[in-house]
Image (cartoon, rainbow, N blue to C red):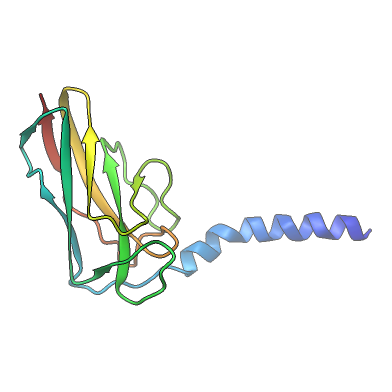
Length: 140
């Protein structure tokens, strides 16, 4: 009988995880903004180029850092839809958990979109989410 209680407890904990993650969202200041400094919207870039991230009204800190009004960048490349804003950001985004403020990308020729999402210490978007405008670029 004891062995049945442990699996049931695990099932209950796993079932409660999405609810817990939603309740644990980190607040962001109303004036916070994340943005792509470069390339600018409409730019034509070579196959390999650098994306520079900007943040206003908050600070950048590595993932795992528990400090008010901080977060780290996640980059969504060619996103078809926004990820869930009440769950940790997954493989649909590139994670910059070390506090990086730029990255080098290599993309196939053609049109692509870039968008930043700020994540808290646990990769969950803030409340309200701090999300950039979409930047559309053309790769030569």
